Length: 147
Picture 1 (cartoon, one colour):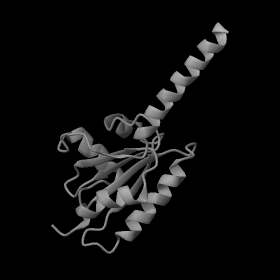
Picture 2: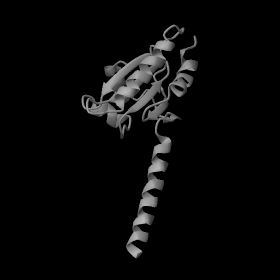
Picture 3: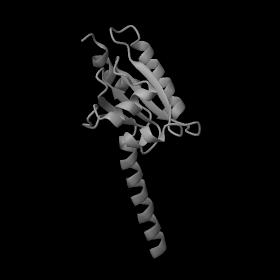
Picture 4: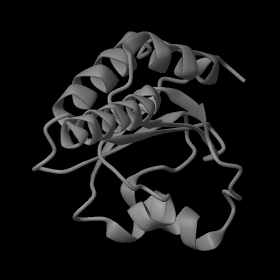
């Protein structure tokens, strides 16, 4: 009887931890206050195409990442909807295995991870997991308006 009680407590604790961790997944969070003018960061971002010419959605993926296909669809859909904006967003996908230095610099700890950069190349939002279309659209839309 004691073993069954212990097992039940452990399972409930694991369930609670899982629920807490999943609550953050797919949420659009404000980006870290990182100095975008830092030369190493700017150089790494420019190498993958984040030039500051307009708002950019940068998403990390890998061939072996299942949920990354869903992120591709969401980002393509939202950037397509905003393509007629005064400053249309750029969609950049980066293979984490090909760009480990950039992933380290941006503290990418899991896949998929998506970033939204403004026209000045500053990180505005970070999304861990698959973003919702409406949340990504709401984050990008103000950045696509004419300055």
